[in-house]
Length: 287
Image (cartoon, rainbow, N blue to C red):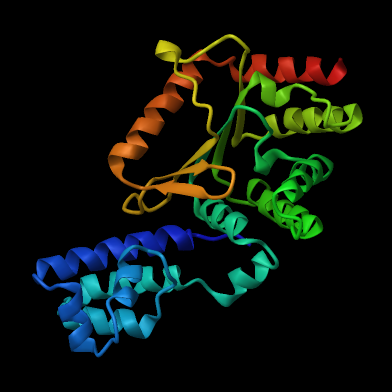
C-alpha cells in the first residue's frame, strides 16, 4: 500500500515541532501537562520524542496552549494526521512484527533508500526461499518466532519496489553477502542471485558490489548493516537505521546522518560499478 509519507518519520517531525513550540513559550513539560490536566509528563515526552502515535485531539490541545497561528497550525494538523497512521495502512501491514513494521513504514514513505549489507542479502531483495532460511535462523534466539508470518511480511515489503512511484533504491553489498554459504542450498543461491540481476534491471534500483579485500577510504568498512532514508518532504528528518541482533537503532540528528552518508559515498567510490556488479552476480549465479 503506497504512502506519500512515512508515519514513523512524521511522528519524529511532529514531536520535534511541538518541542520547539513549547520551548519558544518557555514552558516545562510539567507546566504544559498541568494546563491540560494530564496525569504525568510521560505522555507529552513520548509525543515529543516521536515514540507514540499521537491522538489528534491531544495535538489540537497542545496547539491551543502554544497559541499557534492558523497557517502553521494547519500544517501541523496535516503532519499529525500522517503521524497517527490510517487504519488501512496498519491493516495492510497485517501480522508484521514491530521491527519489520518500522522498516516497512520507512520504506513506504521514502524518496530514496540505501542499504549496506556486509554478510547477507538485504530484506528488500530477498526471494521467499532465501528469506525463509534467514528468518528461521532467528528461532535459535526466539523459539516462538512465526517464520511463515515473517516471510509473508517481507514479501509485502517488496511491493515498494514494484509500485508506480517507487523510491530510488541502492544496495551496497560486500562480496561475502553474495557468496554461497553452507547454510543455503545451491539452488536457492542461484535463484537469489538471478533475482538480484533482474532487480538491477529496474530503472530505480542500483546494486553495487564491494569486492573482497577492497575497503572504502582510509580502510573504513562498517561491520554493522545500516540503511539510509530520505523523504519527499525535505523537512522530514533524514534517517539511518542500524541493524543489531535484538533491536535496531534509529539516528535522526543531522551530524549522525551526515557521517553515514559520507561513509556511503566512500563505499560507493570503492565498489564495482552497476554494470560490473551485474556481470559479477551473473557469473556467480552461473557458477
